[in-house]
Length: 528
Image (cartoon, rainbow, N blue to C red; front, side, top):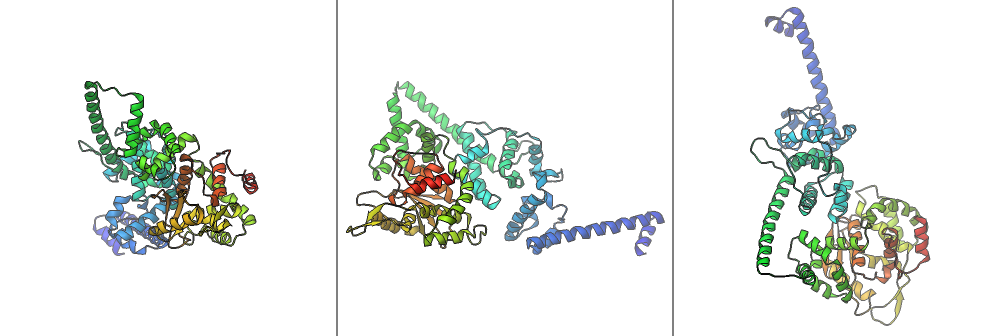
């Protein structure tokens, strides 16, 4: 009645006043429903305390689907709450609007901030090639890229560090192939990123922000590309000046001298990686011949300094690709099918007590709080020692007698478990004394680090006193195998059979000198 008097006093007719009261009731009801939906959602997130921040910022359940990272930063000041809310909101959006593909942008309107102006351009730009090859292929061609894809599959999203890695890979490809990226190309490029990493649709403006009038664009991808391109242009000018100077001095460089100069640049390892990749291709034949001539010792790293740097991994990848074209990605493409099928084989053919313990732990593979994805892959790999046991013998540490290698010996020489990376030198020395005759150099070792065998945290390859670190076990396994192939090394005797299996099954490489085994033949037949 009070509401009716209020509207009548304002000059409205009775009919108009009644209609206004009905509208007020509907709006109030609608507002209450929206607030209830928002509360229910936050209860599912276990983040009810965020409600007061959202209400203060006038954020409703209906408007959540438009929310981007900048909006969250403004609405939810506490960093911890914002981080947790961001991840849960992203998962909710992917589930709620999955049928709309990039659902977070489907309803984006002109109300959104200027930084979101690119979203409209992207949604209307057809997907086209900007990079030298499709982004997914580009990622699969590098250890960092493979690790990025594995991380995304496991965590259903990319963090800040992984986005920086993605940008680095993309920019290196653009610079290496001298691709001139124009402002209008960024839309298509970010479309391709989203086509591979669906959840990145929420972070489009992280990569590129267009600007109006005379202001330069912004965004991490834009800035990284601009800086790298500027450096390359300066380097090209320096090279051009150097070439002119050499021409004026009438210095003629023969092919043999050029190869020697390329070798020297790799030995010193003081050039940019893009230059070294080109040099690596040029010197592949002569470098391979030289490495084969060297007795595997410190001479290799003394002659080729690059193998003692983080760049060694990419050079090893490149060399393997030249030795065995089309086989670089075989481990990753076959692993999923293999890991499922091999478990049934293990159930019927594993008898060793340690192996049975790994089998028992593998039953918890789906529960990440008990066993991580990488740990499961370590166990699956180690169980190969149980079904392909060693047949070799080695001398005891005092040299008085020979001893047949056991399954436990095979596992120990295949993958080394450490609580702390600082312990590796003593363990390497112990294994060298235990398994290898005097005078033989230690071979590459896989090392896994973790305070608990069920939750391994980091992965390494030990190679001639150098350590290569990896984020994922499968990447370290892949690179370790390629080291054996590139340097033409023999597998450790105690775990020779598992390595030969990986070589023949995953990479389809067979050598005349491969040891023969009935159990290996049986396993390969089963996996056909």
